[in-house]
Length: 160
Image (cartoon, rainbow, N blue to C red; front, side):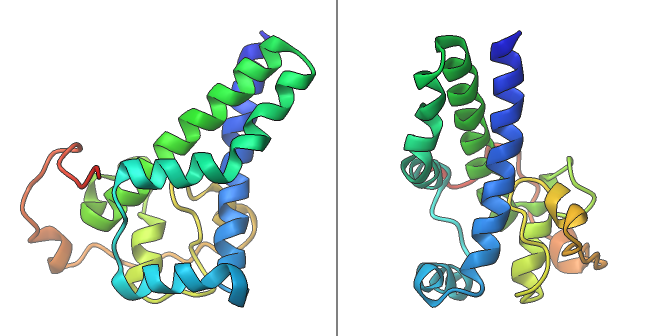
């Protein structure tokens, strides 16, 4: 049971950290340089490269619970790892095929880029924290541009 609790906690906590880091990238010169380039290019770097960056940036935090117990460590590490994979996938999907983000009413990261929202819609994989912290801004995003894109599967996107 501890493994499951730690898995869920890490998954939720990772989404919160991602949300706040994304917000900080919009106000911090130091943290934001690479992010501003991401906005200029408006593309993801590929699922595997995104995943690598997320894991590298959080690896120490992913391992800390092992200091307390093996089950807590396994649950926490796995939850954070699964969230990193989900977020890397969701980020790339929103750049390439936002219509496929069925788990959100509106693909917040896609809208964040499309409408140049520097103060709204900071979630990458989920929109929970935008709702919780008042940064969710709904727009009627599904236009002819999105509807006329070629039909692709969930897996037809840049992986590397």
